[in-house]
Length: 412
Image: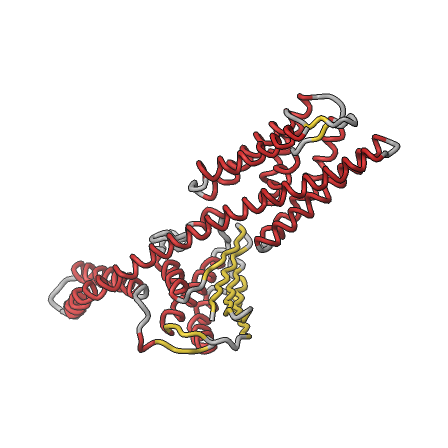
């Protein structure tokens, strides 16, 4: 029996190892399908090699991968697993088929409902929640077994104790491994992003000034030519188009200059109240044009050294993106909140716009990636660059059609 139990545990560990070795570096959007497939294989193996007990019961660890997918993937991912579980259990046959179907259906309805709340918890909170969910579901399953058995003896209570302990311990071990993998992936992405920003910053500092000088000279001569009375309407149109393109080029160069290292003359030690007031005045007319209501909240006493110009540009870029996300919906509400939490300045910017998919969120801040057709991606790259210089980090929550929330945490 002990050997079979260890074999079942191996069936649970193998998908984690396979994902870590072969699929960790795949795009985030494909993770859900891969995890469902690996969990299905693990679940089928557990059903195929059950633990035979001397008191006549057969138990296995099939519901651990089912619980994990339900908590992390929600209804969309666990539904396929639910179908596979019941089809294979029907194929295996024997006593308890209907009981397995009813129990899995109950789990399918209840557990994924808490998936969104589960994902918002801290790493330790998720481990604790998963352990509690495992304890409750296993306890409920054993309760249904007690009705089928009738009179309960000492052996049954030993089974209850061992089953609860086994499920909870194995769940905790798997959760710790999964959370460690998630933490490593986030740290790797953070390091890679930091390296990208470092390269862009060095490139911006060395190239942008050199490009700006000939652009300024060319723009000046074109403006003089534009005032000339000796050129025709068609040539005048060409000059106008040239000036517009030069202005666009200068804007891109200015965006690149934002990635340069903080300038000493712009450095301040402040609680960001001045930046909030300044950016509020800048963004309000733009918000009014697009019928966006803006709510401001400030409750922070912590102070931080930072480049005022870069922080202002960072906030304006985020405000502007939020407003433009609501433009196609005919308006909405942009909520801006600056507060303090455990010696951290927390900036929370929430809109009710079109939202983003998980794949779009995972690509934010990468050079030249933008969710807007006319966008260059430099605005978000500048945001991530500024936050990186402040030793902070950005968390993004979004749902397609409902809106996006950016939370910036800056240690003081």
